Amino acid sequence: METSQVVRQIRMSGYAVFENIIPANEVSAIRKEVVRLQAEHDAESRARQEATRAKGHRIGAKGVGVLKQVINYTQCFAPYLADRRIMDVAETFFGPYVRISCTDAVVNCPGNERGYWHADWPYNQTNASNVKAPYPDCMFHLSSIWMLTDFSAENGATFIIPGSHNTTDNPSKGDLQDFDHEAPYPTEANASGPAGSVLFYDSRLWHAVAPNLSNEPRVALIVRYAPWWLNLNPTMIGRPEHTAMVLETGGKNYESTPISREAYTALSPGVQALYGHFVAD
Ligand SMILES: O=C(O)CCC(=O)C(=O)O
Image (cartoon, rainbow, N blue to C red; front, side):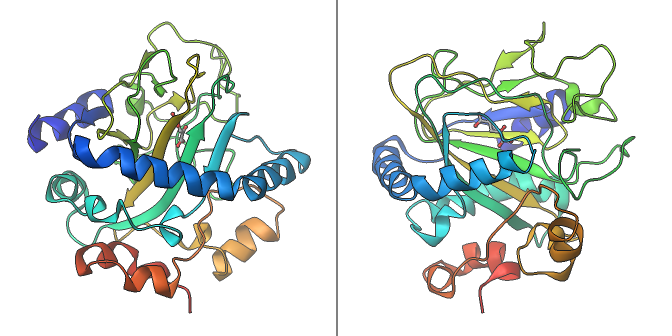
């Protein structure tokens, strides 16, 4: 598919799958490295999820292992983040000076539970910092899920509701009339694709973690692209807005840890430009 077709699909349906971004002969080495690192840090991931749950906050879905800011541990996938095809999509929406707000790895283990319908930050109303509905008709954030295994209905390819990005609110909090944010929805679909593909979606799109009914983990990177004008400070641990809006309120948030100086230095200039806003001192 051409970049212009991807952009059109995101505009019309709220999402598009861009195939062949990571070449087939490289994706399996990247997947193995990401799975190894996530397993190494799994205890931290579980402890963080339990602490979130203990505070009365909702976590994504049980059975999903996370490694936050995986780029601090490996940069093996980094060149693709600034691939010209990817940047053309992001820059078509946001213009130059795009930034990355999140680079997390997720390993959806066989049997993981179904997640709740939500939109991503800054629209997710369960986050301490969020844009109030009704939203203006403007995409503030571009989410992407990088498929390091094939994504299929069987192994839990992300559930999406096509066109839901055009609504002016979202179901994260579970308070919408006539919409059960835990239940299947009649027009839901799995966003499937072969390993090496990137699922792009408007962060307003209603989506949910799907159950993995296969015997193998479903592995992905969660990467989000932000325009220069979106204030990321509430998401950045250590920034005053984060302290005031999240720590002091006891809220849950979409959070990011800084990229280490060592990891940043290992990146090419094109990729550094995406992370320069949040390098550890
Ligand atoms: O991993 C998935 O399929 C969905 C992830 C998700 O819901 C999110 O990143 O907000």
